[in-house]
Length: 390
Ligand code: RFL
Ligand code: PHB
Image (cartoon, rainbow, N blue to C red; front, side):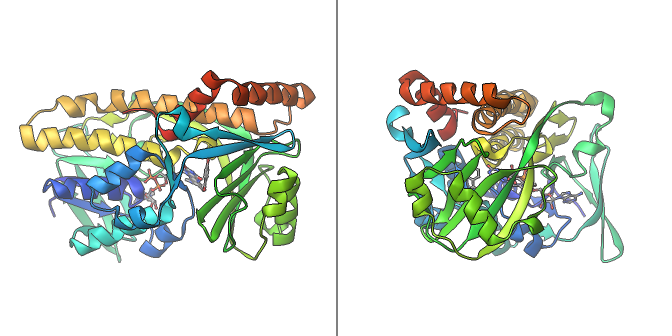
């Protein structure tokens, strides 16, 4: 089989790239290790920058997002027993973020791809990348016990942190940077109205907590937990009690409790691989970088990589120019590192770090107090949160 761009992974980056390429008539095949249901069962990000929304519109996949997404013009930081609102819209000259789940983004992109009759192979086993440092790359995989080969012009490695693409690059050609944080996030999804109409990020001596949502009737909550913790140790009652203890009294009182229908623990890590291009292989999204979720940047960074790569591929196919593709890694990494810094800073400011003790806690309180009383500091948070320019 032949295609123009072989895409490994049908997460948001692979699907979005495939849909954008379809708008300019470039053929793609997506190879996905898991089943469609498994991909759609993962609960992940929830906050979209305007640039991500615009790109989904360009891909023709924003109809439901425009109808159902919630526009938020602020967030609150909770510390010292009360809420301190950061007015994102006022501080950024009119910008906002959109709350719409990654599961829904993925669903919309999959529906669009299927409606257009574009090829996705789910449950593709043993995907392997070949000859991407030469002129004629190809990808092999097994499906139902039969081996297949796809010849292509380019390979887009959109297969996440644990995927095969980054691991296919010889170690001497890649440099990685990593920081692991000494805690995780326990997340819960429940069919109850959110405690606040906007997101609340709480710094508390018992640990960080976040009140988020998927809609006006579905809430997403997180609490910081030890890395070796297990979901089985967290009954719903224990979760709701712990969450409310970490929130200011009036927010805690507004939490509606109910049965959770998803509960999971995610470790927090910062990770970057450089460069993001190896000959005819391009790494995109989580395959190249991971950020802790505190800044809500993971999915948005995946989208900005796609934007740069799409621009490069469009130049290649339309104008027969390699200039955009040559610029991909440098441009993407410049934006990635700024989001890595922002996510690291939000994480350091809002979580309880066992090793820093009471001194660390006081420093965080001083930083938060400065942040909410200084227009310059609030503006810096706001412009990063709504998304830096491309
Ligand atoms: P994805 O979504 O991980 O998709 C990669 C896809 O590749 C497939 N795959 C393979 N396919 C074929 N062959 C192989 N060998 C393969 N190996 C893997 C996988 O099955 C999968 O379908 O990467 P992508 O598209 O780059 O998208 C990135 C985002 O998913 C990610 O940045 C965010 O979800 C990060 N993230 C969060 N971001 C936020 O902004 N807010 C959050 O609250 C948030 N929570 C999370 C998260 C990531 C998590 N992960 C990765 C464990 C919570 C979790 C648990
Ligand atoms: C979420 O709704 O899952 C969410 C929102 C904001 C974050 C992280 C996660 O910073």
